[in-house]
Image (cartoon, rainbow, N blue to C red):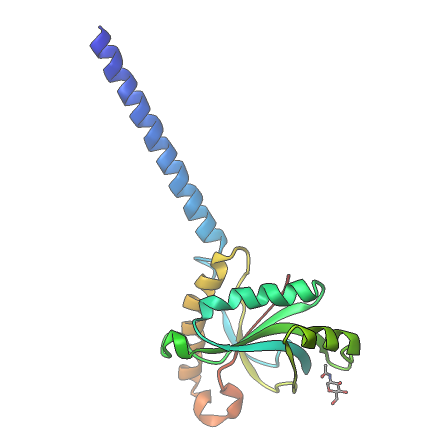
Length: 188
Ligand SMILES: *[C@@H]1O[C@H](CO)[C@@H](O)[C@H](O)[C@H]1NC(C)=O
């Protein structure tokens, strides 16, 4: 009798553990899906989503995974502005230690003038100031930024999609507008 009872409770325990593992896996899976695992990457070409912008940025060479800290730096100086990341190289073909990137905050866009006070503040913390002219034609894609994992999913899914699009439409051969700059913009 006693033996039977302990076998029973072993099964109950095993069942509970199995149920917990299944729940954990479902949660992890849900998290990855929410981060953008299956989000369709739609690439298009046309007029850009931004006009000319003035930004405060820091330039670095190294693995793109290290860019997160710079976003945090920018956010801590001014929480209201939008972040921007410029990734010059294709991380799938250029070795990580040679990848160039610039991360910062958009100070103003279009006809608006950036405030002198803000420029000084960013410069004080080692940021440089640069103005991008408005691009006339861009290849673009958007990806949701819902969790920190989204960034890794985006790097692995958006870059190849952009490459394929550029290769297929052969615009890389025709015009400088297709120089690959991956710009990432979002608010903190
Ligand atoms: C955008 O260009 C206009 C015209 O050249 C200029 O007046 C304006 O300051 C520029 N804006 C930014 C944010 O650089």
